[in-house]
Amino acid sequence: MSTSESSEAVAVGSSTNDEVWMPKASSRTERVWAHPLARWGIIVLLAIIGFSFVGPSLYRGSAYTLHMTALLQPPSARFPLGTNNLGRNMLARLMLGGQTSLEVGFAAAIAGMTIGVVYGLVAGYSGGFVDAVMMRIVDMLRAIPGLFLLLFVDAIVKPSPLILVFLIAGISWHGVSRLVRGEVLRIRSEGFVEAAVAAGASKGRIMRQYLFPNAIGVIIVSTTFHIADAILAVAGLSFLGLGLPPPLPNWGAMLANSMAYLPQNAWWLVYPPGFMILLTVLSINFIGDGVRAAFGRNARRAGRRGA
Image 1 (tube, rainbow, N blue to C red):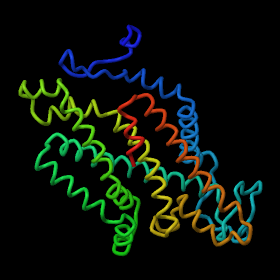
Image 2: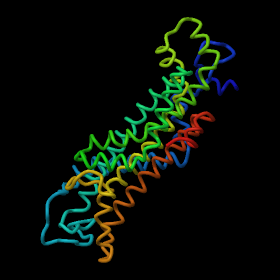
Image 3: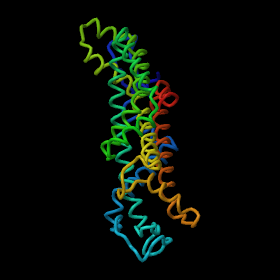
């Protein structure tokens, strides 16, 4: 490592020969921003967040008011994105739907990642019988089709944003746990971990101060892709009628409801929500590509095996 490169890195660990060098946070941020696709993704995602959360306070249109004299109206000065079959303002519903989709998607991804990271850390560091049992549990859970589980829960519980978060998290953490476990199995054989064990450090301290920081690259990259997957899951469930009940809008439900009006050429009902879903997922994936490049070789596993 050159002098200029070493100034942008920090060493993790205590063994001279087994130090793990990672770029400083500021350097990683600069590398992500320097990535062309990631920079585009960040700008677009911020614009989508602003549209969804700041837009309603600027536009002042109601997402629930029924305009009975303006059913299925195409875009106009009064309704920039037209109205649906009930006369509801599609621009206002697109903004509010973005709030729901983004909130549930981000919360579900973070919840799933948290469960998976903790589970993978414990399984990977424990090893032996404990690791084998924990991974067999993961294998059994992964054998249950996620859609079947969602259909079952939907039949007995009324969907709500919180329930949807836990449902998506419950079917997404398994892959994360295996990814983190594999990374921990690699890291725990490093000299600085063995030195910490020899020094009498507790298991909790080793996982918290040595294993987790050195696996953070893989975790962050995997998180970005899981956010995109969670947003797609929210949209997909809503499209299948398993999402949030009306009149609360979200992009998937808006897209599903628009299908019946395609023969009437009501394109303003189809393209805006579909375009927002596509743009959001693409921007998050581009950010993930930039983060993966910034964290280097080890984090590339998350891009290949994540989600």
